[in-house]
Each structure stands twice: as structure tokens, then as C-alpha cells.
Image (cartoon, rainbow, N blue to C red; front, top):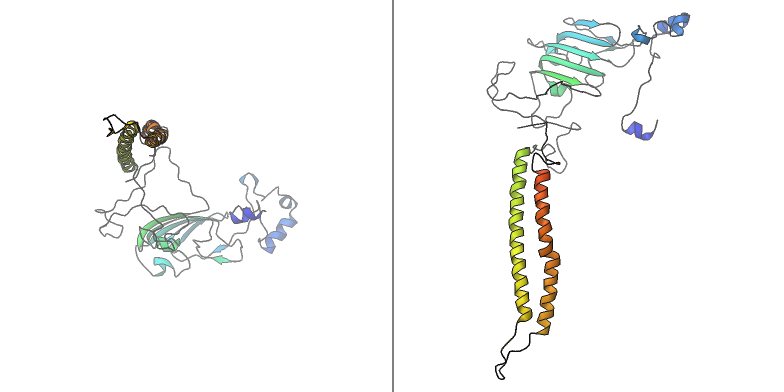
Length: 318
């Protein structure tokens, strides 16, 4: 296994690991030729397999549904850890829960275990009254940490939510009533937090508001309009300078001798010609290209029909 695999978590458990089976199970396996050869109780084609599964410490109020595959459904009261934990441990009423979990750890049949929201392989926890953020060790974010509220928490190595049609993430907010009968006074939003971290050492907010696409488009269109106005000012100024330089190159005075016109200044003519060359090369000429580029930018990025329309064609938020 490479160092990169370890760093990025690409560590795979062996396909079968029965090393933690009890000695009696291991001896029985070796004593049976068919079982030792994997012909029975080997797990192929979803046949039964003798694998190490920890013992669950069952509370008196809990009903357990399990079938020796380290998959469990526990019907009971709010209990994120040991028997004294959660609102069930406090003796609270209105704290019913359903805990769906696979892969309790450690994988040792000699050990009795409690729910472990950190190390159990995957879980869906439904509770009538719980501290869901505390249970899953989540940062508060801008939404805050919920306390004594009904909640559903999901955790696994990977989580996928797939809909054949659409998916909505909705917060009801002000005007709704929570599960405890209280009126909700504030509308909370949706936090998208990578890394379970919501602060920065330099004091700036790590969680920042999501821009709204159409407002961003309006902002950029207005900005493009200001750029066009500035470009028009630059073009007007450049054209005026060109005319001024032409007049400067042809400028002459009336001589005091016989009232005859003097010849144009050779230095002024050279300077004016040089400046006009630069104006045409760096301002007047490129201005035409600039106008084409700004129009192309509008069409490509700020128009729904554009190839690089900056707004999502599928996802929306308020």
C-alpha cells in the first residue's frame, strides 16, 4: 500500500476477516472439512458466514431486530452511546428512536458495545428528541446546533441521495411549529460544510453566503455597461487627441516679415505623428476588438442561450 493511499484513505479491509472469531468457532471451522474449504458457511452467494460480531448492550426498553450479519434495527429511546446517554438516559418522555446501523465495532464477539456514532460503519438515526449535532460531532455553522429536537441523522463512508425526478431541500421556518409544539420564529437556511469546519484562524468567516445567479448576472451586466461607457469616453478622448495632433503637425505662425506664414514645426510634426501612431495602435484600433469582445462575453456568459451561461441550468436556491 502506497503512502498516498494511506493519506487519502484508500484503505480497503480484506474481503474476509474471521481472525476475531471465538476459539470455539475457529475450532469448529477447522474440524469441518466442508466449512474449512469454504463450501458451507463461507458466505458465497449470500450463504451464512461465521464472522465476528460484537455483542450489543441492550437497554430494557429496546426491541432489537438483527440476524447475525452485524446489521441492526433498534427500536427504543434516544440513546447515542451508553445506557445513561441521550434523552432516554435522562428518563425523558417523548424521546422514542429508531436506530438503523450496520458494522458495529470493534469486530470482536467477546466485547459488548454501545451505539458509537463515530466508529460504527453506517447509520440512520431517527429520534423524537435528541441533540443531533452533538451526537454526530458537527460544527454549529450558521444554522446552529439543535438541542432537544426531533432529528434524522445519517452517516457512512459515502452517502448518495438519488431521485428519479427532483430533489428539494426545504426549511419551513417562520410560521411553522416544531415537534415540541413551539412556534418557529426565524427562517434558517441550508449550510453546505466541507471538512466539518466553520471558522478560520484569521477571523474571516469560513461559511459564506451563496450568490444568487440571476442577481450576479444583473450585476455583471451593469458592470459591463459601465465598462462600455468608460470605453466610449476613452474612444472620444482618443479621437480628440488624434485630431489635435493632426492640427499640431500642420500648425504654423504668421511671420512678422512681410506677413508670410512660417513652415510647420518639424519637432511638433514628428511628435504628433508618433503620438497618433501609438493612439491608433493601442487605443483606436483595439477599441473595435474590445467592443466585439464585450458583446461576445455577454452572449457566452450572461445569456441563458450562451455556451458558458454562468447560472446552473438545473439547480436553484433562494
